Length: 226
Ligand SMILES: [Zn+2]
Image 1: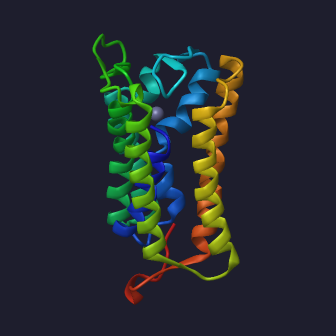
Image 2 (image 1 turned 180 degrees about the horizontal axis):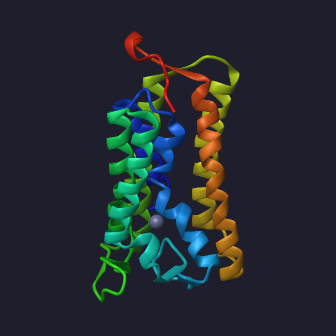
């Protein structure tokens, strides 16, 4: 999944309004933050293969460290613990834990069976929603709209950065999504791995505009933690 993961981060703001969107968004994309790093280190492999599924021209050959269920649970627990030590904010802790896990669950819905349960395991999970482009767009698009709507409703801009930082981010995600759909596949696995590192920029970006938005309808929780 792609933009659906971001929907989880946006929606989490409703459950954990005092948490920074930086942390809430890093959680559901965490496995994809790790993935290019492991590709570059040569520990995981992907192959460019147009037609692998209708939506995604990639064959996720080997990614047991970033994307197995067992390691996802470990990443989730590590992330949530670190978050909790820094903030002591339970709603944020729970959102980050579920956020990291949600990545695996959402990927399991869209990928063809290529997600391992644990490193070294033979069994692969994947329901293959990506085999249908219309179904993919409907499901991911709906999730994304709900997520953005929840965040927009939960928070209020304090200045222009709060307005344009947020909406330009949402618009760019949609453009990247369409680019993935209609654009050519990446020229090589190496280019893909380095290009995929761009996702790290998401964290400072959302952290930045989130600081320029305040929490709507809740005076008691106006203070924003890490
Ligand atoms: Zn993923």
